[in-house]
Length: 175
Image 1 (cartoon, rainbow, N blue to C red):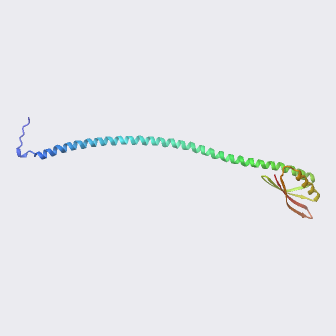
Image 2: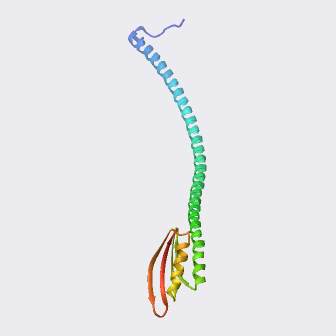
Image 3: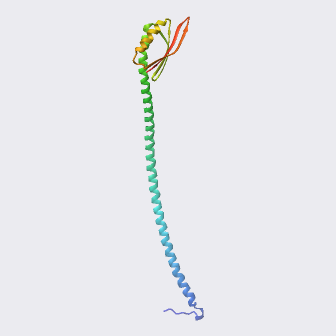
Protein backbone atom coordinates (compact mmCIF):
# COMPACT_ATOMS: atom_id res chain seq x y z
CA UNK A 1 0.00 0.00 0.00
CA UNK A 2 1.14 3.47 -0.81
CA UNK A 3 1.58 5.99 1.83
CA UNK A 4 -0.05 9.28 1.07
CA UNK A 5 2.21 11.98 2.35
CA UNK A 6 0.14 14.83 0.97
CA UNK A 7 -1.99 16.74 3.33
CA UNK A 8 -5.71 16.07 3.13
CA UNK A 9 -6.53 19.58 2.03
CA UNK A 10 -4.39 19.10 -1.13
CA UNK A 11 -6.25 16.02 -2.33
CA UNK A 12 -8.50 16.69 -5.34
CA UNK A 13 -12.17 16.96 -4.88
CA UNK A 14 -14.37 14.06 -5.86
CA UNK A 15 -16.05 16.02 -8.66
CA UNK A 16 -12.63 16.72 -10.23
CA UNK A 17 -11.59 13.07 -9.97
CA UNK A 18 -14.88 12.02 -11.50
CA UNK A 19 -14.35 14.53 -14.36
CA UNK A 20 -10.86 13.20 -15.01
CA UNK A 21 -12.16 9.62 -14.99
CA UNK A 22 -14.87 10.39 -17.60
CA UNK A 23 -12.47 12.45 -19.69
CA UNK A 24 -10.09 9.47 -19.84
CA UNK A 25 -12.96 7.21 -20.94
CA UNK A 26 -14.14 9.70 -23.60
CA UNK A 27 -10.56 10.13 -24.86
CA UNK A 28 -10.13 6.34 -25.07
CA UNK A 29 -13.43 5.96 -26.96
CA UNK A 30 -12.55 8.89 -29.29
CA UNK A 31 -9.13 7.37 -30.00
CA UNK A 32 -10.79 4.03 -30.77
CA UNK A 33 -13.24 5.76 -33.15
CA UNK A 34 -10.32 7.59 -34.76
CA UNK A 35 -8.47 4.31 -35.35
CA UNK A 36 -11.63 2.67 -36.76
CA UNK A 37 -12.31 5.65 -39.08
CA UNK A 38 -8.64 5.63 -40.14
CA UNK A 39 -8.90 1.94 -41.03
CA UNK A 40 -12.20 2.56 -42.84
CA UNK A 41 -10.62 5.42 -44.81
CA UNK A 42 -7.66 3.22 -45.77
CA UNK A 43 -10.08 0.48 -46.88
CA UNK A 44 -12.07 3.03 -48.92
CA UNK A 45 -8.87 4.26 -50.58
CA UNK A 46 -7.97 0.66 -51.44
CA UNK A 47 -11.42 0.10 -53.00
CA UNK A 48 -11.14 3.33 -54.97
CA UNK A 49 -7.67 2.45 -56.26
CA UNK A 50 -8.92 -0.96 -57.42
CA UNK A 51 -11.88 0.73 -59.16
CA UNK A 52 -9.50 3.18 -60.84
CA UNK A 53 -7.34 0.29 -62.06
CA UNK A 54 -10.37 -1.54 -63.45
CA UNK A 55 -11.65 1.65 -65.10
CA UNK A 56 -8.22 2.22 -66.66
CA UNK A 57 -8.15 -1.35 -67.96
CA UNK A 58 -11.67 -0.93 -69.38
CA UNK A 59 -10.63 2.36 -70.98
CA UNK A 60 -7.68 0.65 -72.67
CA UNK A 61 -9.89 -2.18 -73.94
CA UNK A 62 -12.40 0.37 -75.27
CA UNK A 63 -9.55 2.22 -77.01
CA UNK A 64 -8.46 -1.03 -78.67
CA UNK A 65 -12.05 -1.80 -79.63
CA UNK A 66 -12.47 1.72 -81.01
CA UNK A 67 -9.31 1.36 -83.08
CA UNK A 68 -10.56 -1.91 -84.57
CA UNK A 69 -13.99 -0.36 -85.20
CA UNK A 70 -12.32 2.60 -86.94
CA UNK A 71 -10.52 0.16 -89.24
CA UNK A 72 -13.80 -1.66 -89.87
CA UNK A 73 -15.59 1.62 -90.56
CA UNK A 74 -12.81 2.70 -92.90
CA UNK A 75 -13.03 -0.58 -94.79
CA UNK A 76 -16.84 -0.21 -94.93
CA UNK A 77 -16.48 3.30 -96.38
CA UNK A 78 -13.99 2.01 -98.94
CA UNK A 79 -16.34 -0.85 -99.77
CA UNK A 80 -19.24 1.58 -100.19
CA UNK A 81 -17.10 3.74 -102.49
CA UNK A 82 -16.12 0.69 -104.49
CA UNK A 83 -19.78 -0.33 -104.82
CA UNK A 84 -20.63 3.18 -106.01
CA UNK A 85 -17.88 3.00 -108.58
CA UNK A 86 -18.98 -0.47 -109.65
CA UNK A 87 -22.53 0.80 -110.12
CA UNK A 88 -21.27 3.75 -112.15
CA UNK A 89 -19.18 1.38 -114.27
CA UNK A 90 -22.19 -0.86 -114.75
CA UNK A 91 -24.27 2.12 -115.86
CA UNK A 92 -21.45 3.06 -118.23
CA UNK A 93 -21.39 -0.50 -119.53
CA UNK A 94 -25.04 0.02 -120.50
CA UNK A 95 -23.83 2.96 -122.57
CA UNK A 96 -21.32 0.61 -124.21
CA UNK A 97 -24.35 -1.20 -125.56
CA UNK A 98 -25.37 2.18 -126.97
CA UNK A 99 -21.93 2.52 -128.55
CA UNK A 100 -22.21 -0.85 -130.22
CA UNK A 101 -25.76 -0.06 -131.34
CA UNK A 102 -24.63 3.24 -132.79
CA UNK A 103 -21.71 1.44 -134.44
CA UNK A 104 -24.26 -0.39 -136.55
CA UNK A 105 -25.93 2.92 -137.50
CA UNK A 106 -22.56 4.46 -138.35
CA UNK A 107 -21.64 1.47 -140.53
CA UNK A 108 -24.96 1.80 -142.40
CA UNK A 109 -24.42 5.56 -142.85
CA UNK A 110 -20.84 5.04 -144.09
CA UNK A 111 -22.04 2.35 -146.49
CA UNK A 112 -24.55 4.85 -147.91
CA UNK A 113 -21.84 7.52 -148.29
CA UNK A 114 -23.03 9.69 -145.39
CA UNK A 115 -20.48 11.45 -143.17
CA UNK A 116 -21.10 11.36 -139.39
CA UNK A 117 -19.90 14.73 -138.04
CA UNK A 118 -20.76 14.78 -134.35
CA UNK A 119 -21.91 12.19 -131.81
CA UNK A 120 -23.03 12.73 -128.21
CA UNK A 121 -23.95 9.73 -126.08
CA UNK A 122 -25.69 9.47 -122.73
CA UNK A 123 -27.25 6.41 -121.12
CA UNK A 124 -30.32 5.56 -123.16
CA UNK A 125 -29.81 8.44 -125.61
CA UNK A 126 -27.60 9.05 -128.65
CA UNK A 127 -27.50 12.31 -130.58
CA UNK A 128 -25.59 12.53 -133.86
CA UNK A 129 -25.18 14.97 -136.72
CA UNK A 130 -24.60 13.85 -140.27
CA UNK A 131 -23.52 15.63 -143.44
CA UNK A 132 -24.88 14.49 -146.77
CA UNK A 133 -25.04 15.92 -150.25
CA UNK A 134 -28.07 14.11 -151.64
CA UNK A 135 -31.51 14.06 -149.96
CA UNK A 136 -32.19 10.54 -151.28
CA UNK A 137 -29.40 9.29 -148.96
CA UNK A 138 -31.38 10.72 -146.05
CA UNK A 139 -34.43 8.68 -147.09
CA UNK A 140 -32.33 5.50 -147.13
CA UNK A 141 -30.80 6.28 -143.70
CA UNK A 142 -34.20 7.00 -142.12
CA UNK A 143 -35.54 3.74 -143.54
CA UNK A 144 -32.62 1.78 -142.06
CA UNK A 145 -33.05 3.57 -138.68
CA UNK A 146 -36.76 2.71 -138.66
CA UNK A 147 -35.91 -0.96 -139.21
CA UNK A 148 -33.30 -0.94 -136.40
CA UNK A 149 -34.89 -2.63 -133.34
CA UNK A 150 -32.32 -1.24 -130.87
CA UNK A 151 -34.03 2.17 -130.75
CA UNK A 152 -37.53 2.77 -129.40
CA UNK A 153 -37.85 6.31 -130.67
CA UNK A 154 -36.11 8.38 -133.35
CA UNK A 155 -36.34 12.18 -133.37
CA UNK A 156 -35.20 14.58 -136.07
CA UNK A 157 -33.69 17.37 -133.99
CA UNK A 158 -32.51 19.75 -136.72
CA UNK A 159 -32.42 19.94 -140.47
CA UNK A 160 -30.21 22.56 -142.17
CA UNK A 161 -29.22 23.10 -145.76
CA UNK A 162 -26.10 24.89 -146.99
CA UNK A 163 -25.73 25.15 -150.79
CA UNK A 164 -21.94 24.75 -150.65
CA UNK A 165 -21.66 21.81 -148.22
CA UNK A 166 -25.06 20.10 -148.31
CA UNK A 167 -27.51 18.93 -145.66
CA UNK A 168 -26.73 18.98 -141.93
CA UNK A 169 -29.17 16.70 -140.11
CA UNK A 170 -29.25 15.95 -136.38
CA UNK A 171 -31.02 12.86 -135.05
CA UNK A 172 -31.71 11.80 -131.45
CA UNK A 173 -32.05 8.06 -130.91
CA UNK A 174 -33.64 6.71 -127.72
CA UNK A 175 -32.98 3.16 -126.61
